[in-house]
Length: 426
Image (cartoon, rainbow, N blue to C red):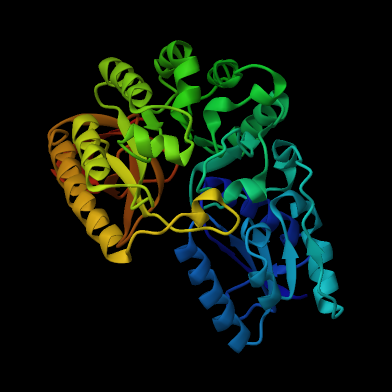
């Protein structure tokens, strides 16, 4: 039996695809380490050039080890040159054909499967191979988006919004719960616009059905863009009242300058972002706010960057995913004159320092508090990662994955809290 290894780059959506790929391959091939594998599947991400370079370096390392390489994910649909470096290619919509791709590779052919017709991946629940080392099930609810961002290359790979059926999603969640999973991560490129390809916003309706499912489990809602979250703000706030919904909000702003947002073709203004944040923080004081920032966009001036810094200081996100602008092939922004790397690096470092201070202050306020937590997975040095309903990471000792516990926060670090078990729950 041939052996395989699977490497995943990128977001939760890629991780969900990897679960499907892993499950299908495991039916016929044996999972193994990278060194022992006969072939390696790289599930790629094409969001930024830095990741592409990292993947290209990995391909060269694998070639020197004489491994057969199959490139999956978004990158083949964004960069044609990388396709020449591997033995087989499969796009995000072709995951069901991964075994056929492997067979053709070992027959000496070079298969390229890049069909762009969307498929309902929520129907593939029986094919997924969930890891026993965590209590988290990643559930994709849609693929593609409705955005026309000037810098984004992912749209070339994932296409327009395709929302999966609610029945399939609910079936997937129920199956995961029956398997013993206690944490559900709903993921998508833009979760807030779920259902719009069918004519209406369906996320509130879907969430209502999810929280009505019997059982003791928690749900994390994935990333959504401001222009769509704004349209469902009131019903979303009410749904977040549920004890099953993490008080976690991932809403990317990308820039604090309306002028730059217009250049990016983001489809909203900073006031829309601020309106959403204000409403959520007023209702949920412990909200785990996550946002994304692109520094060094080609049209970003010093004043634009200052507006971004001021915005971050105002809303104090717990996590800020900072990305230095990176030109991607075929995008509108790739035609613009790039800023020097020195400026991008300076701005990135400056903003990172501010974000670190915000995290430090946020962590301190939880010391001494008792929290109900869910133990998610093993951590480093015989510890366990747990999360309370506000999703901040809490490190514990002597815990059991999948259990709800009561803990007391003893110490605060910028990126996590250290807790002590007070009372086991369930």
